[in-house]
Amino acid sequence: MRDALARREISAVYRLLRRHGVSQRQIAALTGQSQSEVSEILKGRQVMAYDVLARIAQGLGVPRGYMGLAYDEATAVRVAATAESPHSEEDESVKRRKFLAHAAAITVGAAVFGTDSGSWASSPAQTPAPGRIGMTDIRQVEAATRALRTLDYQYGGGSCRDAVVAQLSWGQQMLGANATDLVKERLYVALADLHNLAGWTSFDTGLYDSARNHFGQALGLAKQGRKEELVANILYRMGRVYLHQNAPDDALKVFQLGQLAAQNSGSELAVGILCANEAWAYAKMGSDDQALKLLGRARDEFARANIAESPAWAKFFDANDLSAMIGTVHTELAQTVDAKYTRTAVPALTKAISGYGDEMARSRSFNLTSLSINHLLDGDIDHGARLGRQAIELSEGLKSVRTKDRMKPLQHEAEKRRNNPDARELAERLAKFTGNDSAA
Image: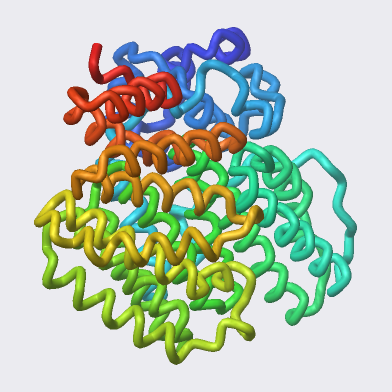
């Protein structure tokens, strides 16, 4: 068994388990895999993804060092064999369904730490934690999360993701420390928000499986801490992952679950954020009536919200972000339904851009990209190209995969206008920046 583990021959590991009376069903339950996956591995399918190997090691109770996995998640980001490769162990639609089932169970009140929680279990931590904790320890976690979130907004998830994961490595151990019930409840919320940030920074760096795992853990902790508003925020962020992957149907389902939690929390801001993002999903599907209806509700909820009293994870959504969402939804509608929607998109995006400071560089980049698309659609190619160049220049200083991905529709519009020298130059710069040479 040690030899098979050292070679990471999981098929040999599973065959040895079967030989000693462990059923396929038991292996599947322990490792968080389906029985069909276990069957395929038994037939010889190789397991290459780091996240899956780590989950198997944890599920079987195998010391990570036996499989050469004796490093933390921050290091795993830098190794070649990760679950973010094209050879991911499960089809993406299957992963979405599993997350949706998990989110539904959390949102409607199922047991938080039940038999399925192993799928979201975090890696064993390394740094010693105190045997007893108090509010001072919790405040340290909260302060670190605020500081790291600021770095994410300004420089992108790649600037701070490893630091977030390292903080989690220590923070997770506090769950086993002695504490009063009040301290424990606040710890659940603090760690949920830290996992929430880990998920968001993973998403921003293109690590979608890692993002899903962190959001999954965040949901359970937020529910344990009885913070419905945070549950809503986590689901909004996971829905954004699916929007980014151009899966608006799945995104809408997650947003709608988040809407249940938002309404249960009584937070107008949380409800407004979910409404705005549901509008984006409908816009991607070309449903302008539903999109505009939800945008209207988002405005109404935002008008009633008290942002000053909102928690850090929701406070980002201010008047600028509302304008940005209005502009984003109308940009989407301009591409999927009718170019007339640029008339609303342009002023909304312009207002958002003027309101963002240097501390929100990534948001400025997103909105410059959308504004550039609108001007190209309107035929104002020289101005659109100039805005596109500004978006590229701003994004070059960010450690964010998302900024590049969000420029692909702009590249598509520029390519369609290659007869114009400004559009052609923009298309070529975008191809170089994004690594997506669609003209080739």
